[in-house]
Image (cartoon, rainbow, N blue to C red; front, side, top):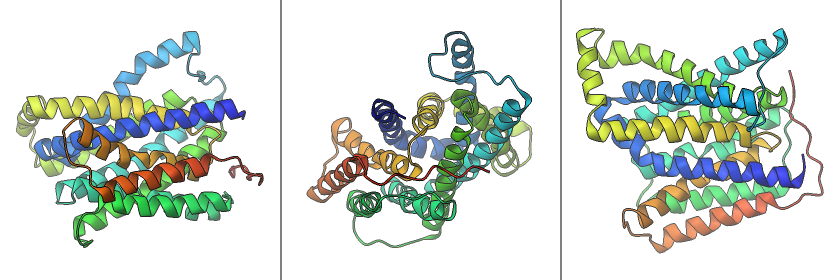
Length: 317
């Protein structure tokens, strides 16, 4: 892949992180109103549906570089990719959403979730995915920056934090799963839509049996709550922007990018979340938080420097 394509893919990952950073507040507030499973179910069905016309346009114009699967092998790869990525996305999102619902603050959730930046290269070692030393250094710097940015006061773990941290492990698996199927040249937007449908369908079960108590009469009231002002705005933003657009940009952007480097770029989500609160909501940005932002930006630049070491390609199975 050329340097120009690498820069473009890195830019797409930055845009995805920007959207996720802004969406974190919407995700937290929307889940509090509707319940974590209802919010997850609805947002991903919206994300899947939003992508359907994009797929149709892409088939005619090829504007995003994808293609409709033609052979049986390509169709099989797409089915497996949608199922595997969807399962990872379901578990990761629900763990994150449940952690937020049961008391983990948005800042701490951002830090614990972003711990995938250290989990991705560690898991990658077992899959023969090597990283240059500068990337490992960038991971360490980013982790320090995230701590300064997200954690205020004493760092104490509670059960909701443990749940969120478990979600971080699954987010790491999601990144590596996408990397694997991008090697097989699966259509990125079709993959994105399918994983959303899988997540929406699976999330519907805990939504119905846990939040609606298995009673169909509660469905209408739940829909009414979801369509209320505050919840509706949060669900639409999370469904259209965070799911439909940002996750698709992630899949397109990860093509040809080392998964560890991709995870570093996407950790900018925490930076953008804090900066959005500072610029849009007028929240204060402390010196410690500003230093955290600087460290993370510096680490991202370090990870993008050209390397003399030829990285091994991702392992195919």
